Every structure is written in C-alpha cells, then in structure tokens.
Image 1 (tube, rainbow, N blue to C red):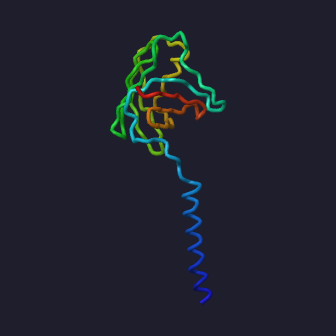
Image 2 (image 1 turned 180 degrees about the vertical axis):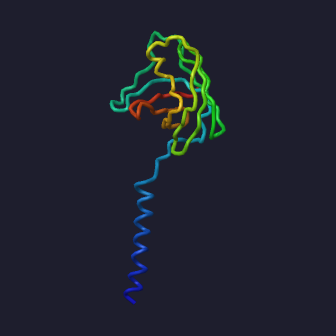
Length: 151
C-alpha cells in the first residue's frame, strides 16, 4: 500500500511544481493589446534602454517621421517618410511580439542624424510592444527603442 501511495503522490507533486513554474516564472508578459501594428505612427523619441534617457526630435526639425503599418495580423506593409525621404517596406508579425522586416527602403537623399536612425534593416527581427496609442520597437540587440505615438 505504501508503494502505491508513493507512486501516486510523487507524480502529483511533480505536476504541481511544473504548473507553478509555468504560471509564476515562465509566462511572457503581454506585450501588445492587439494582434496588429496597423495604424499611422509618429516617431516621438529614441530611448537608450541602459540609461533610460529618451532622445526627442531636434527642436529645429520642421518635419516628423511617420510610418504607416498595415497588416492582416500576419504580413504587412510599411509606408511613410523620414525628414527628407519617402520609405516603404514589408514585414511579418511573429510570435512573442516580434516583427521581421522583410524589406525596407526608400529615396536616397542624405538624412540628418536623428532621422537617419529611423531606417529599419531588411531581413532583421525586432521585438515590439504595443499598448493603446504607443508602439515601441526595440533594436540594436535590445539596447535602444524607437517610441512611436499613434496619430
């Protein structure tokens, strides 16, 4: 009887500890309140994630960086402008709030430093967070974030 009880109790405790880990330590926090990036977004700042310091648009800049994302919750397109260039591209939405930019390009007029950093790199994955009217795209191995506000 003790052997049977032992055989039944051990799997029970193992299953409890495994489910506790899944619930307490392993869940990925929600990173998006919607399964799409669709919308028109204005770049508000770059943020150095190690210092937390945002770098906002230069005061003398008379234009905004605007990206319009349009997707079917799986594949999408990007269109928009930097300070001096028109840009376009395509992307795939992946699990765990990742986006793979499959193409990105545009006109080739020299960019001021701040807006030149807005170009996304083709065939690159980024992590994103989307909450209400804010979209954050993490880049440079997670060291920097592009922070957009929905228009």
